[in-house]
Picture 1 (cartoon, one colour):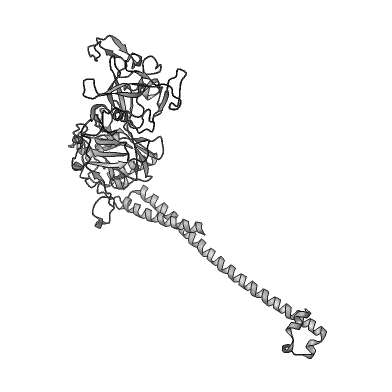
Picture 2 (cartoon, helix red, strand yellow):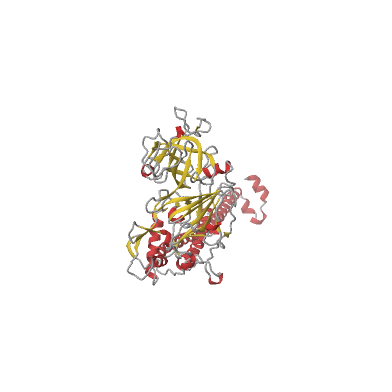
Length: 551
């Protein structure tokens, strides 16, 4: 009985949630406008953040999603002389690592693997040099220190007493090596940035993409509980180079900017709007809670999910179901909305820009809807067409930058989503991530909120024929109604059964009582007839007490 009551309450709540979702999905009621319209409001917590004005270390990033497929930072490591290393900026891992000379037997050729170094210690474009360093020559550096193999802190100690590490990355590639300490400088030696002692991984083995990529290594910036081997933003704070472990990444369509110790408000696209801060959901990664996903104003099923903010990932990665629904919603938008999607669809997720039309590439982008991630009470994150479309080589073909996720239940928001956004990573308690449109690079075709008129967050587009959404809604409602009917029948059956049981018990008791009384009278009547009492007295004159004694 209790189980059925709980089931009924659960179904009632399900119908309430479904009713609200249906309003969002089918009535287009997801814009942040006046309550009187009966539409849902998505409030964004926008705060004008004040950066740390002193001790900010800044440097340029190099990269794109056409040639490199990532963004990297040039750092200088060690002394005698300092050696340049190109490191991929990666908020999905916490280890800074690159190949070391003389110990890496399976490492590929990278940007700086054949650096020619002059005797003065500066890099030369002329080719004059005194030595060639295939990888980082850690043994030649005056400032290199070996980390002792302390079994209390090292998870893996080799026979040579090296403190070893292994780092697996999302696409399947892997680093193996040992930890060391050396000096590092963000940016070139002539910059004003300071040197600090850095824990890093001396790579002895590379696999797959790490072996074939141009970048020398990886700059791990993820949150980490390991106190001895923290990411470099924490190491810079501990070295007093900066006042905070906060850092900012601003990826452009080409190249970008990184800040350590704070962020530059001059890079905000709109100073008045400021930054939208969203708390992280765990202590080991930059992940946020995503409560919804929309294409224009069409809700996409299968969310909520965890959203991982990963600068080292190229694309946006999600489950197959979300991908399919996004493409179907986009097709419906293009079909039902006149004057939209002026490009020709050439694949399930690709559209071609027709240069013969009297339309600019910016107009091409503006004709497509915004993809929006809903972070609940903390606002929304808009992904504009100029960023979610990636040009295929030098062609006029643009494809949506979404790939299959390796881990179900997680949406990885990689560089394709982060482009043209100023993103602030604050690992201090309470950990949070700040988002705002940024001036990360010059791009004349970029779509801004002002251009596409989505200052309220969503396109005003009705979705009257999204069959894949309606069918899902109808099935759930039908299932809920069926379960409720079964539940009501069960209640009625149990009630009738209970009543009948009570009536039967009463009838049986009465029948037994009547039968016993009759037998009692019949039995005593025969006894009294035997002793002749009834022949001489009336029934009313019989002494009950004497009868009882006799019996």
